Amino acid sequence: MLKRFILLLSVFSQSLFFVVPAGASSLLDTSVPALSRKANFIARVKVLSTDVVKKQGFIWTGVNVEIFETFKGRTPSFNQMTVYIPGGKLAKAGGDYEIKVAGAPQLRVGSDYVLFIDHNLKSEGFNLLTNWASYLVSRDSSTGQKYVVSEGERIRRPRMRALSASTAENNIQTYDSFASSIYEGLNEPN
Image 1 (spheres, rainbow, N blue to C red):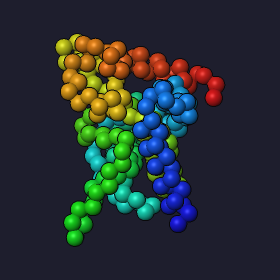
Image 2: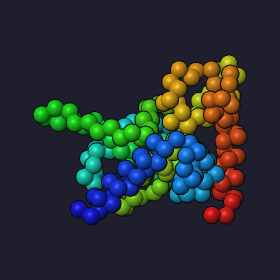
Image 3: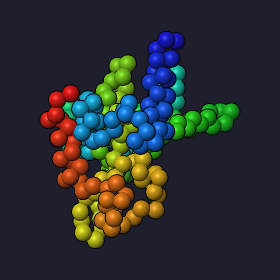
Image 4: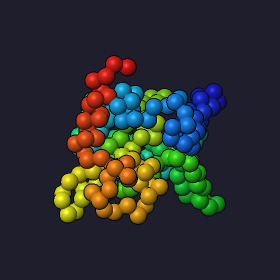
């Protein structure tokens, strides 16, 4: 029971940080360099599939990913892993059971992301996103240039299509600039 309480407290405390307006709190540094220092594993991945499971007394969406590029940590064998995001829809005999957690990213099958991951919470290969940090990697169809946008930003602005049109105002970076921010964080002392 204590383990379940601590796990739920961890999940809900992360969601509390995401409802605080940017600049309103200095408790949590969510810059890419800070996330780079905090995460155990950072990689560019492609989402292969999702499965909703009940683990450790809570509903989770297991996101199965293929790893293409590792920035930090050791790449798992077979270049694949599962990352768990709180919430999901679980089918039951008496009807579906759905949990939605405010601020939790919703990663789409077939899309590429850069994920900041905390390895093995409570062992069992239970990988969680560091501060729920996920960044969508997209390619501009007209230029071929790769861009990165925070998954939270993509959710807030779902009509964002022309990535190169206004990168500064949409909080979008080129992939190379984003990767440089990761390495900058890895080279800074904690």
